[in-house]
Length: 494
Ligand code: PLP
Image (cartoon, rainbow, N blue to C red; front, side):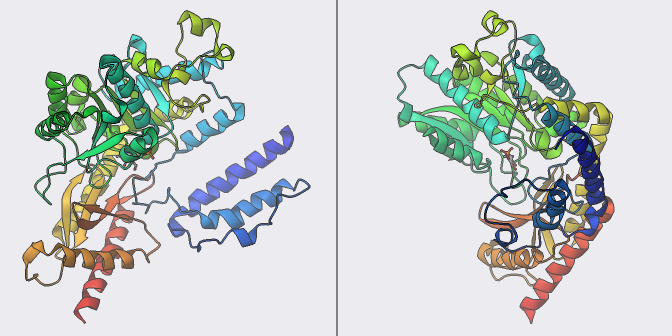
C-alpha cells in the first residue's frame, strides 16, 4: 500500500468505524458464533501473492466483526467496561503511525516528556500528593500495559527493597499479601516470581460489611507469619474489588504498616475505582487520604473507567529509585549521553519490557478533549445510572442486593419465591436458583453481565461504564433481568 492508497483506505476505514458505532445499539452484545467458527472460513496458509486491500477490509467486516463481543455496546455491563472514545482511538492511530518504541528519552524525547507531563496532570486531577509527581524528581508516574503488570512491577521493586533492608532473608520465606477479594493477578504474580501468596481474610457478612481489609486483620496475619519465620514484604490492597467493589481501609492498614512493619510495601490496586478520585466528592470513599499518606504505589487503569482505549494502566510510585534499583539493566547499546548524565527519565527502567507504546498520546487527547469537567460528568453519570439500577433491585420483591452498590457496580441475586425452611442460611439452595437464573440470562444476547462468587454466595454483577450507556439502556436491562428472574421462579414452582 502506498501513501495515496493508505489515504483512501484510511478514509474508508473511518467511514466503516463510524457506521459500526451507529449500528452498535442494534447489534447483539455477545458474539453469535460457536467455538472454531473462524478456521473453516480462512485458508490454511497465508496467500502467496498480496491481495487487494478492499477484499481484506471486506473480510474484516464479514468474518471478524461477527466474532467480536461488543465491549462498547451501551448494554455491555460485564466485568468492568472499557470505555473507549474517538479521541483515544485517534491517539492510538497517531501513535501507530510513527511506530515508536520510545523506551528511553533519546529514543523519542516527546514520548517520555509527554508521559511525564500527562501522568502529572492525572495525578493532580486525582488530588494525589505531590510526592507522586514526576515534577518532584523523587516519585513519579508511568503508563504500564495492565494493572497486572503494574502490580508485578511494584512487587519486584518491593522485593528488592525488602532484601536490601534485610539481606539475610531466605527468598523462600518471602510472602506476598493479598486478600480473598484481590484480583487474581496477585496469585499470578506469585506464580511468575515463584513466591508464596497469602490471601488474608476480610470482614465478611452479606449486607453489613463490604469485604474490606482493615488494620487489625493485617496485623494478626503478619504476627502469625512472622512467628513461623515468614517475611511478608508487600501488601496488595484494593480500592474497588472486582467482585463487589469493596474498598480496603487504606489509612487503617497503612498506619499499621508504618507503625509496625515499615519494610512492607503498600501497593494500592485501584484499577477500576481509582478513577473516581477525579471527583472531589468521591475522594473520601476512594481512600485518597490513606493513599496520599501511606501508599508506596498506586495503580489506576485509564482503560477501564477512564475513557481511554485499552491499554493504559497508570502506576504511580512514591520513590522512583525503588523501581530503577530493581529494574535498571544498561548494556552498552542502551547507554545515552543524557541517560548517563542522569538528566532524563528513561522509562525502560520503570517497567518489565524494553519497548513501550506511546500511550500518553491518547490520554493527552482524552484529558484535553473532555477536560476535567467532562471527565467528572461522565463518571457521575455512570454512578447515577448504576444507582437507578440498584434502586430497581432494592424495590424488587424477587431480587436483593448482595453487597451495597459501589460507585457504578451493583451485585445482586434472585430470591427464592418462598421462604426457605432454613431461612437465608440455605446458601446452596439459593446458589442453585441463581445459577439457573444466570444460565437463563446468558441466553439474552441484547445485554451482557458477569457472575461472581463472594464468600460462597453466587451472585450477578452489573457494572456501568460504557461511554454510550443511557438511562433507557438501564431500564431495558432491568426489564430483561426482571423477566428472566420471574420466568426462572415460575419454572421452578411448576
Ligand atoms: N484490579 C481490579 C480491581 C480489576 O477489576 C481488574 C480487572 O478487571 C484488574 C485489576 C486486572 O486488570 P488488568 O487487565 O489491567 O490487568
